[in-house]
Length: 286
Image (cartoon, rainbow, N blue to C red; front, side):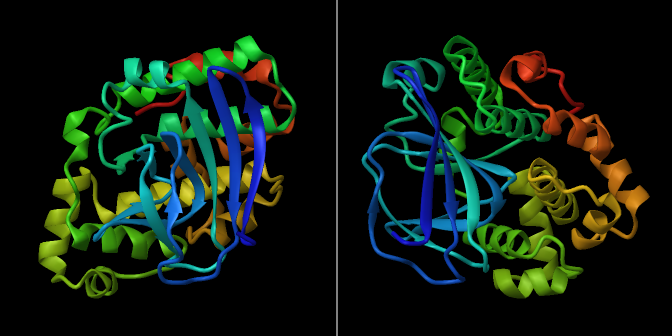
């Protein structure tokens, strides 16, 4: 499809990593697509909805999409400018060992904690900069898979579908994370009352809508920093923060480092230099 662009970052017998850039405009469901092999899809920017039969799964930067192999699906885009994703495909035996039955269970979205979000972004950036040492790349990939397997929602309990109202709320928030919207606007998009939506959102996702939006903003900041953003004050304003210090304090609290430090790390990033960070389970506070 013309709006999809694929770039191989790593290709080995154990692990394949691809960068997928989608530049589709805001749209409803597109044509049917077919997922060949199971995949772990990490959206870094933007949001899309994966429609399987009559159920829609929202994929945004706060989540990991566990795509079932052999699945037929359609994709819609609730916002302009598409999305950017990192796609990891493991050897089937490795995936089944780490996530038993994952290849056979329904496609689903599971939470992506901030430390794993950060480590994955570093991994993508290191591979994109040419650090293609096979042993290191595969080892880091397995470390990331282990972190996913140990995280919330990765086991059989993660197959429980979220309510359509919460998924509509996620799609609305992720389509405009920088916007100053109130709960009334989110509730109208979700077709629920403010009181009901606030309760269901927290019950199903374990966090508030405000915190969810904050992590989306910070994920977008990671993507902008990886892309070479050098004006942190302007970045803070673009992402909806009141001022630079608020942005920096929030970023450090979530990722354990300042935006300036992360920008410096990404500027000189190579896989060998980042391996210690990527394999450290306490890379950032939870």
